Amino acid sequence: MEELLELYGTMGISQGVYAYGEKALEKLKDRFAEIDKIAEHNQAKVIAAMQKNRVSATCFAATTGYGYDDIGRDNLEKVYADVFHTEAALVRPQITCGTHALTVALSANLLPGDELLSPVGLPYDTLQEVIGIRQSPCSLAEYGVTYNQVDLLQDGSFDYDGIRKAINSKTKMVTIQRSKGYATRPSFSVKQIGELIAFVKSVKPDIICMVDNCYGEFVETIEPSDVGADMVVGSLIKNPGGGLAPIGGYICGTKACVDRCAYRLSAPGLGQEVGANLGLMPALYQGFFLAPTVVAGAEKGAIFAANLYEPLGFKCVPNATESRHDIIQAVELGCEEGMIAFCRGIQAAAPVDSFATPLPWDMPGYNDKVIMAAGAFVQGSSIELSADGPIRPPYAVYFQGGLTWCHAKLGILMSLQKMVDAGLVTL
Ligand SMILES: *Cc1c(COP(=O)(O)O)cnc(C)c1O
Image 1 (tube, rainbow, N blue to C red):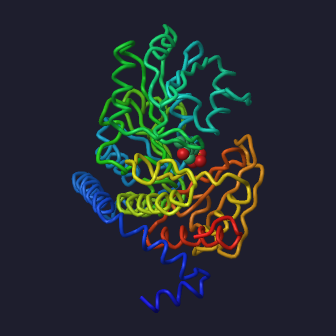
Image 2: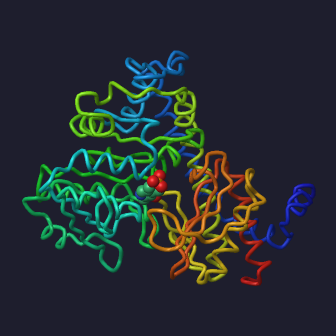
């Protein structure tokens, strides 16, 4: 204990900040135990899928070139399909990021004249250019796919009347974003998503329901594909990559939808048959294996952050006590200086690039300046401890990740330390 305090002291964490953190932690024992239960369930789910598909060292072999008959790649897709309880899965290092995976899912299943509906308000920043909400070359809008949107009601619930009115003969697909992204609305539980999907299908049964599952994987024991989603889509440098996947994205869903995604990703006629694994299979398998416990650690970090900052007067979404549906914690710091201090703390606690100083900058795909703190083994990985946010009111940082709970804890304590050092809070 004394030695840990001394060690933390040399890293810049004062006894006051440490003690404040310990006090917050005392109240979190039961919640942390619940998270461990969910992790245990999901761990078993992943292991069962790996056993069923007879994962062996053969699956870890590298392939190059076309990648025909790539056993490791094909088997990993079966493992994903079994965990998500879907007919098919496309899990590829050739999918460069979450936005790319979502773009493939959308553009593969929407044709000119079709309409896309978001019944949960404005989609994630980078998707706005994909859809054409903000003009961009090669957007869906440019290809003649129209877009319609129904905002959430004041209390964050679904506007069922508005959704019913918005669905028309052209509505081909609905996109549901599970996580809040860069908004301060609540994230949805899988159960809520299931209710929304059931409603949409009751109005028009053949609508394809796609869920942007980014940051939501393994937070609950069920996934949106368990409650009627036709496609669930996400990034491997977030939850399901477990911190080990160096690149990639996934699309799990019906065979009809996933087949089209494969044709869009590679080429019509080729589909899932091509795409060498380039030696990445060990990382993709092992990352998926680790993901349930990594997500649990990240979630503990998010809850710890809310319980540290909320009593100090900063609005937290989700708040200190409410249930969680993703690993993101928004903390409204109220000013640019607060965002900078918070991010400096996260950066200073990192194993990689701890000496760097995060600054707000213009990023492709984002409308406002963005500040990002990340000292990650995989660049840009946000399942690793990271904090970011657009510089705009209410000056919220979106904090997420942490490959281990201990690192998440250190990072959050360090963020608070930087806030204290900058005179922005007094404990
Ligand atoms: C991160 C994220 C994306 C985009 O993923 P990238 O890998 O950054 O392209 C899309 N939707 C949501 C909700 C996200 O959190």
